[in-house]
Image (cartoon, rainbow, N blue to C red; front, top):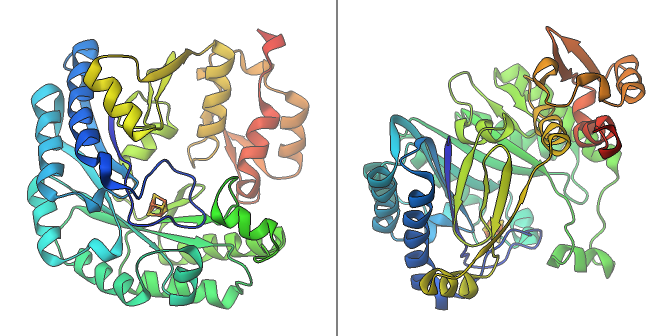
Length: 375
Ligand code: SF4
């Protein structure tokens, strides 16, 4: 086992675009956190004292929790598993939760990396997205994090917003770089079903931009990060050498991980499972010792396709010889098409996407998929 993920399913308010599992109702918070401790004990009994190289607190909004609770989870993980001495321990935080005191508490709890949900440096955009912080919070929190002595830190930004011009996106990237950001996760706004944003779009209250505009912003992002010396090591992730996200990289490389908490997923090479996405149901099941998850065993075809889907998103691509299902069974006409269009290439035995191909990573991967008939 490589990574350990804790899903903290509580937020102050719902962001309009978000389809993660979370609740703004704190009624079940204590019960859920107690149940997560129980789940960790239960999973340890099944897995033994596996080695953990990375721990990640995601959500939801983990920065809402009392830092003592975060410290207790880290200590519990250290008591139950073999956690590497130099493990990366990430906490997702929102700008309005950041104070110098809290940062110090997280640091002494064992957090080594802060991932800040910045999203934008403009008040109008933050209001549009339903965020609880404003631009002043975003800037202040970055300054505090940069000086707090963590091993590394990162921020999230969102582009592809309605009526966003290249100049606006440039300005956002300039502000981030001026603040010394060693790593950036940049996501294109997407309309997920059953979100407030989907409702606004359906009602005609919000008009999403054309693909061309979003695509030009992605090009500008790649250009600016390249000029600034941040490597584009995954479609949405850029980092200076030594600052790549180790936890997420292990997901993309197909390493095993254990997910704790409502809706959390776990992956063990041949199988994956996912916890119930219901806070009360999760807490009750753990307390009563009943089932709280579903799972599936993956076939060689599924495992191969998963490697293609996650591996092609990274700068390292996919080692063709290491694919479980014979590489020749990859959809070869699709591969030839993407190679001839200059969107994919084979380099040192690895299938990788070019800069042009990164615009279409998911589509290229799914076009290459091995089908069940090929088994
Ligand atoms: S804070 Fe994060 S998890 Fe919570 S609603 Fe907003 S985007 Fe979703």
